[in-house]
Image 1: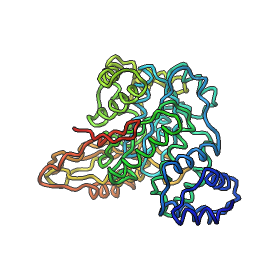
Image 2 (image 1 turned 30 degrees about the horizontal axis):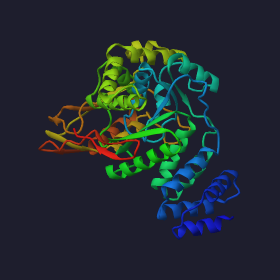
Image 3 (image 1 turned 90 degrees about the vertical axis):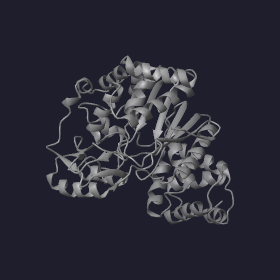
Image 4 (image 1 turned 45 degrees about the vertical axis):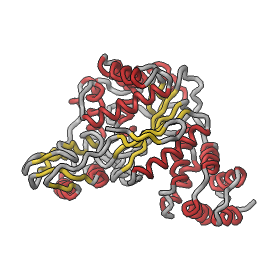
Length: 443
């Protein structure tokens, strides 16, 4: 067996066998296959695609390339939620405590943000003392004690993905559905949960611009999860508009806490409730109506907020920041962006707004970059809102005074105004059940 024949087979539209995929992934990780041949196969896959069988096998071989997380020491049903990323996407901070308050175990490994997509770990680390570098036993013990734990990913979790993504990034093969699906699902399967819920984004703030492409990706990932023996489902959600009002680490923490108090923005609250009730439904907690009631109760009786407080304390964080969110440090400069005209906000370039948050200090452009937990934006108006000239559209938070003028200008250029309100876009486009069928959601 050799890479030349494997590349030619895929180039000509053939289906790779398990042994051929295993040979490729192993050689890629060991370094016995040169980068130029790996890149050639990635490009052949981009052009020719992969069957569902091939994609599942690639996912499994990537999963087996490194460590897997053994959650057998955790009592109860383990659940995980994964988002494909977006601007203001803080859902884990609210969903995990709700799920734990309803009796599920959330043992989640998360990453740091890069570019305009924020990382859950960065948001949690805006709380002084919060520790995400845990041993496996510490991780298990915290979940057993509190019902949830969010920790950083291990250094050797799916090393094949790190290698392949590095080459995809420089060979224009990132946007291949089987390669995206195997990348995401190999990490989710390695994390060891019994149930996986996917929040697949579409729109300008995500890497899937078209909702039907997002549906196809979600269907493929659900089939991979089911094929690997995990109950898996997905929601297709809108990222043409930033989620909630806050973008930035401590700012998003505050919004998540307020949401667990029954407050906060309508769109974020709705998505949190939809994802949380879907997790409960998948875990067999009742029919959909009962699961929605359980979510509401966890919020209204304060048990979800208590779970977040318990996790913060168990991981060394100062829970005072949950009870007194005004304790979070504020940026030195908090300045408004005002509307230049009357009208309606027709459209927001969400990716551009995410990049503004990076320029203000809330994100990083390189993996080892430093972030400012107090930096970011708080939106005052969003797509569909009516505005008058001089109305505050957003507040910019930064310790970089020199970044403000450019950020204001870029923010205004990211908005499109009109004389009439735009057509309302659904927050949740579709759900993908465990049979991989897409069900459109009516709003």
